[in-house]
Image (cartoon, rainbow, N blue to C red):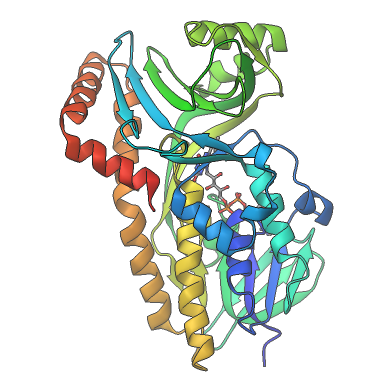
Amino acid sequence: MVDYDVIVVGGGPAGLAFARSLAGSGLRLAVVERQPLDALADPVPDGREIALTHRSVATLEALDAWARLDPADVAPLRAARVFNGSSRFALTFGGTMSGDDRLGQLVPNHRIRRALFQAVEGQDGLTLFAGSTVTEVRTDRRRAEVALSDGRSLTARLLVASDSRLSDVRDRLGIKAEINRLGQSMMVCRVVHEGDHGGVATEWFDHGHTIAMLPLNGRMSSAVLTLPAAAMQRIAALAPEALGAEITRRYHGRLGTMTPVEAPHVYPLVMTYADHFAATRAALIGDTAVGMHPVTAHGFNFGLQGQATLARLVREAAAKGRDIAAPLLLRRYEMTHRLATRPLYTATKLLVRLYTDERPPFAIARHAALRAAAHLPLVRGTVTRLLMQH
Ligand SMILES: Cc1cc2nc3c(=O)[nH]c(=O)nc-3n(C[C@H](O)[C@H](O)[C@H](O)COP(=O)(O)OP(=O)(O)OC[C@H]3O[C@@H](n4cnc5c(N)ncnc54)[C@H](O)[C@@H]3O)c2cc1C
């Protein structure tokens, strides 16, 4: 006899979405999260603006999370433009379609977390262990067992790890992962500006840095600056006025003077891809399975897709009275999610290489790549469809 049917380790957006996807299945769930309850219930801003595809919005609607967002926190994304160096040429995605939200919607990560928390709060059969860390993991053919930092131990038929890209549970399960530490950091900071962004995101690869502007509501954008880690430390430590001047200068004043409205947040860039998404009585979801580079804005979109795939298989098995962690079921999840994520993960790795290497062959190659993509409607159409994912 086990205490639960499923233990989810990590109450981040992927873990909470998965727990909500199992609502009404009759399964007993335990969600273990390191952060205390009040931090989960009302997460503080972390600077991430998540570009959600239409498919992700539909998933959040189905999970009863979308309606919990304040419309003022949702910004439509009409199109995206990519520039290279001082060239005025831009590759545009989504420009020819109709509708204000041609590519998707931008929503702050902490608001998504709050909405998902509200959606699972009080869910039948769900027990939340907030403020607890998993310190030991054991699995065998019959069950999974985890020990918590407060001395308790829990057992279940299935263990789901969603404890982020440098996952401790993944290590403890003996699953290796490709881990690319890129030596670069990304700073995100909300700024207000004089010019109108028109709902268009820009990504600009220039000498020594990459700068992107994500359009938020009103004359506000999220400035996203990528630099070598050491250089970033110096910039993130600037006083607000000097930081605004630095961002304005790096963006060549395209939207006029920029003024920070929140403290900047800095993320070291690490791309990860687990060698396996499943093991005996265990599965990996969210960033624990696939940790994307933010440049292609797909980490959480993939996280939502993966949790939905696993939840569907688990629900089907439960409804038929079958084992919810049968090896065949877990293999099907792994295969489906690898097929869905590997191509874009690999393309993103190439893109990052192409756009962060400053040596002349790479500068020429990226210019050629942008021009070629612009003249190949198939490439543009495919990328746009991928970004939109209806
Ligand atoms: C700057 C930036 C911009 C981004 N933009 C986009 C975007 O536009 N579109 C997009 O789709 N994605 C984007 N992403 C990616 C997205 O933020 C992640 O994919 C998503 O947050 C991952 O969710 P997760 O639940 O898998 O992991 P996390 O959000 O990392 O959550 C993991 C949770 O597990 C908990 N935890 C960790 N270890 C333990 C333990 N041992 N025991 C218990 N609990 C534990 C943590 O406290 C945390 O709550 C961006 C990321 C960054 C950094």
